[in-house]
Length: 362
Length: 157
Image 1 (cartoon, one colour):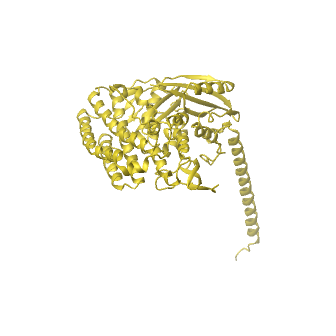
Image 2: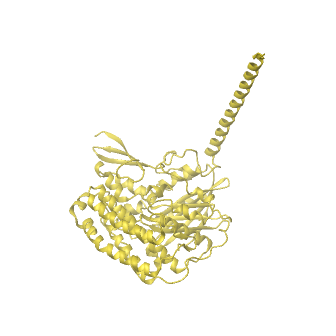
Image 3: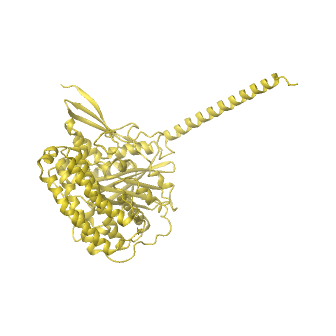
């Protein structure tokens, strides 16, 4: 029997943009077990909700993570709106979805670039990030910020996008789409990409269900779950929504699902720009969440289902606010996919799952 | 909008509810703790498609709770989190990090009423009192020495 060795992986590693530590138990360069440890950037932001009033706390939620920033402010606002029975104006609902889908485009392009960088395809990495810049440019044009948008509030949105500017966004996305098709073809047809990713980190549909994984990680294992398909908020304006799936269950499938979701998000933005209603941007929110009131809500973040829970106590400060991020849901699945993995494939496997540690630790 | 279904349960009903959700193919969407006076409130959320149900359970600090991670492996993260941040004691969990998952610098920072937090506070207070006492003693000794030196000083002229 080969000797077992424990190799520390992370928290600092070239493929990890954020710190997570894994103890890899290996036998002949094959991983037998992976034990994750986090806690390097835990900031206790959930506790901060007791010190900041519920309206000011939106600014904190945007700072949970630099990639899912807008999504967290949206998820938080939606939860408080349920808690207080606030009806968001339709135009605000649609604007929220437009910004959120653009965030998904930028998040997936960032990830595709990191993946390409991970397997040494530097040019592909640069092209992905070059396109991502245009989405950041749209953010800057419409909100003044590139990462922290400060566009969402409890009750609606802080700013409007004029209809002609919305048409301008569609033109930018149409221009991007043509260039993105070339990248998409490289990700999905190039042999070097497939050779590096096929068969890595297999997670069957049954195991994906058992381990409760979420988002593109789950959809790449054939699980048709996407909160957007329930038609909540601005997604209700869409004619139809079908989640992008793959049955291949490996790292390549996860790449394929995310790469195709970029086009899907561009389509959503285009459809919503055509359908956006006129009207108010924000509903008036008065008073405080009632004592003992509770609300839950879910949002499809770029990495999957994000769960929010809020509890009021009759004051302007919340008693409790909880965010269960998709990455914390995917941790058990990630550990499972490590078992039997070659040591050399560990970085690629982690990349294809795309854990967001800032969100997970909050 | 997700359905807002909250069901209050007792500790002895937990296992039955968890087994029922698991058998019916519901997914564990969340498990979290929150401190309520000197107790801890646990919220278990289960989802299946657009359906969502939440079980709410109030337990005493230090009370042993059967873990759900053997049935729902993704719960190992939530259980270790609730254990380290709120002091919830889970029995039979898949992985128990023993306080080294988040490695908080103080015990159960989100729940000051938990036993480990109380013990930590008591020992921190005792250490602070001892330090004060030591400083006070040091200041007294220094005062006495200064007085002694003043008496020895020969007046000029």
